[in-house]
Length: 304
Image 1 (cartoon, rainbow, N blue to C red):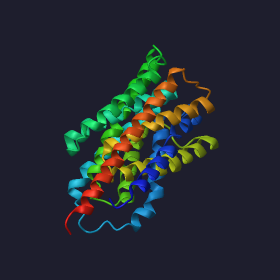
Image 2: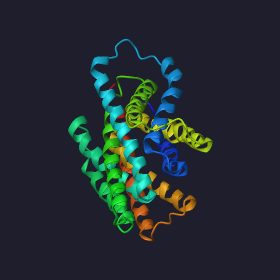
Image 3: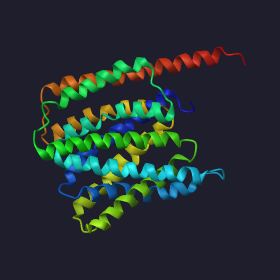
Image 4: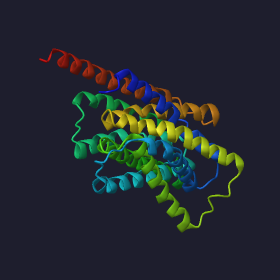
């Protein structure tokens, strides 16, 4: 690997820390249509990346006929992810939305095996089970039995599937385009899909209060441009299921922020669930570290 294992982990942790503020900023935005929030989050990020993408050297061997359909598909699933997840945040609690959205490692494991042939070792199974158990413990009592909350929970699960597909495509295309060029195109494509819905539904997306504009810019530059882009960077270097497992920590951080800033105090079992999730993440990255050490030893002893 070109990047050191330590550097990769630091960047991934930093990206998740920034990304974990998404739910809080969305809540601060208030009663604004989820399509508007998703559009500006993606469109602003794409515009900011344009000058950097133009400076990257894509090379003359880019197979545009092959990758264009996949780029469109990535943008489509990214648009679906943000729209469904932001809508879920407006219908249910931050804890429910984040934790149910965090089921994406299960989707990523299945999809990685089917499409990338990246089969997770059986040693990862206990960590995955512990992580899922942690998520279940944190949300099972808090799920409210009414239509709006249940719809929000369902949308959170759907958004988990969408982000797993999106990261899968990002890993598949890792050798096709430089990272900033890829992100600029995909963010712009996703924003275009959402813009078409805004126009079709006749939603006024330019007449917003100043404080909402500021929060939308913060959401675009922080959680999306820095946090979300860092996940794409990591997806090019390690298997998708590992990136998704690391993302489980976002649910713990976001729930902590919600308790502190939004007065959404989690029930007592949340702390046990959060502990299990942290244990599962630690197990995965210890296994990754041991695997890296073994590979380095094999390479060092190989005949020159």
